[in-house]
Amino acid sequence: MEEVADLCDEMTVDGLGNLICKVGSGGKRIMMAAHMDEIGLMANYTEPKTGYLRFTGIGGIFQNSLFGNRVMFEDGTVGVIGGEDVVGKGRTSIPGLNKFFIDTEDETGQQRVSEGQPCSMWRETTRRGGRVIGKAMDDRIGCVVAIETMRKLNKQAPNECVFVFTVQEEVGTRGARAAAYGVDPDIGIALDVTATGDDINNRKMAVKLGGGAAIKVHDSTLIVPPAIVRWMVSRAEADGIPYQRELLVGGGTDGGAIQVARAGVPAGCISIPLRYVHTTSETADMNDVQACIDLLTGLLRNPVELE
Image 1: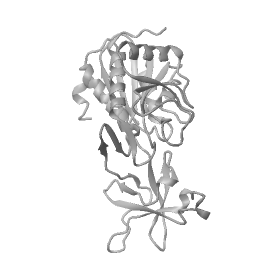
Image 2 (image 1 turned 60 degrees about the vertical axis):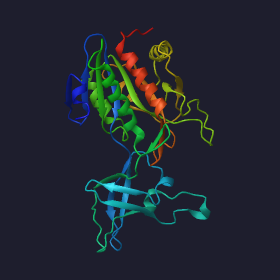
Image 3 (image 1 turned 30 degrees about the vertical axis):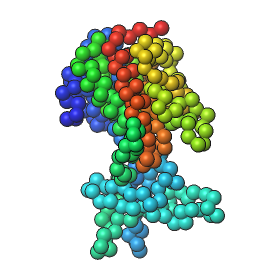
Image 4 (image 1 turned 90 degrees about the horizontal axis):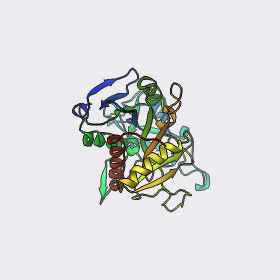
């Protein structure tokens, strides 16, 4: 809250925990949504003999990225994820979550965490040239786009711009659903990440790291109205901002929740290309991040014309 308090005209927190920041007045009411939450784990059972913690996932967890990773609980306790037969039968299969556990044992042999406590993956953030690598880029990097756009607007906009830093996106876009009902926007824009098609697996996807802002056309929860796509594309081309069209086969964003608020809201998404999504080494290109900031700023600084 301290980061954005001086960047907006009004700031509130709703009943679900969404942080809502308003900038400007007049024109269209445009809601931006960037989620603050991240994937994680929650302890749900303590093994009586060993004290190891069994857990359930919070959001989309990839089992093949768990073994040996560290997690941090709210009280600062760091645990290590272990597993049973982690390579699977004949090293050809990946075990289910029920085969993993968290070790939080200290030197006295006591486990320091009890059931019901959540934790997040624990890994430092690092830079490699113009690329940033770390956990929870999904969607802290979207929050960066929102904050830096607010900074560039400097409380001046011909539209009523409502920046919502949402909660519980990873478990069903719950925060955006509640916020969109309260904000009642004319237009919605999700600010989130998207996968890329430029890694060794050669995913059939046109988005690449370093290719610019990804303007969403559709995903599994949202078909973007053509007028919204044209609005974003025309602004990118007018301002000389590098962009690419995003067609995501699986996954969704807060945009899917915004579009079905009340009687329906035309919604789109500006996506930051990201490699290794939902791992502890999510990788973003800062040139793409800047392109997203520039595109969103250009959209909000000008009167909205949907054709």
